Image (cartoon, rainbow, N blue to C red):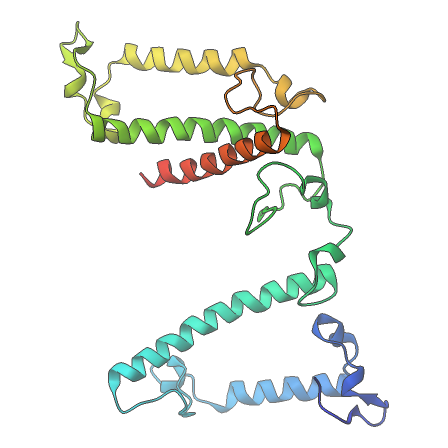
Length: 269
């Protein structure tokens, strides 16, 4: 709850009349903001924060987080830093949510004007983050652009899943017997794992890899996302399917999630 009584007698403004969150900014009288700014300025300039002073390191003599044990004191001060970092993220998130829904604890359902609602039912919208678009690429609500990005995401995810398995498999199961290139006298066993393999594979080998990748890219076409009846990422290769719609959606959502994980995995590797 709020303080009893008045925030401003002259304006007949009670504390109970002031809403929470960003809406309070317009309710607080200008004299109230002046007092807040004056106190902030006093706190800012009253302490010595010159280079090398205790104030420069955040020590203004207000001894709450202290201890006679140096290890305990350090632990408390580290906790303060960690909690401060968390709070900085939290208050920005609350400002953002307040601006969208009208409340710092507002329900997403209250933000009825969000263009993201056009994509809330799409595959890949999964707990705990729901529809996650930190760069606001879908802020314009353009369905065509979303379908193209989804097709690209699926394609990159599939390639990354294959790449991740290709990176791991030789380490676990070994390599093919025989020669990668008889003319160069190069056996599969001679090719190292990982990025070191790039310089070992002959140019003609890379030409074959690039040619096959180009064939897959061109032959698939773009009907999957350009055609209104198309499904992004559907090239007729029916592996993840089911006669039960719920089961099929579960499998396709799992493919997207695994593809996202694989993209992070192969970059990390």
